[in-house]
Image (cartoon, rainbow, N blue to C red; front, side, top):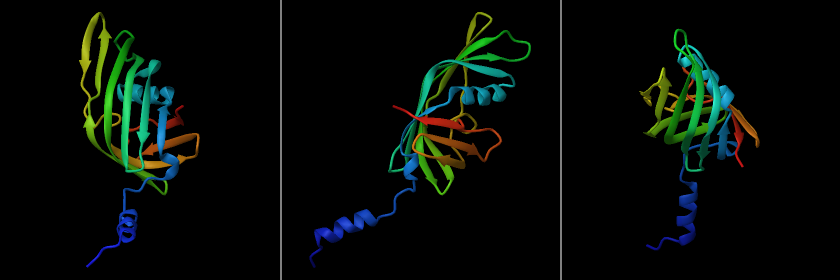
Length: 166
């Protein structure tokens, strides 16, 4: 029995892949002010962005890679002097986004945080099961310039506002 090369190519093209809406594909940059509001609430205080970038790349094969590069937030919590919290690392995993719903299952999570509190540097533990960028699900609205995410969890897992990078 001979198998036609055309048939093989057609079978590969017809193989179902993870569903990702075309408007979600590409590189996105997080709105740091919106991210700061979430992080401040999660620390029972307020946070203001000082610097850094958060980039997310979503590929047609359903992979998402988030790179947190030298993110610095000035955080104010009750009974503690204001402090700068620094976060860097990567979160990546499988991304599905279609018909206004998204979900991420995290495979790699290497976020590292630190804070200078009253002259002492302390490490901040991040956990993919509860932390920002650790997976989750929710809704989205996107166009060629921006995407807005909502989270099903009361603890938001992804910054709500992103703009197309580059």
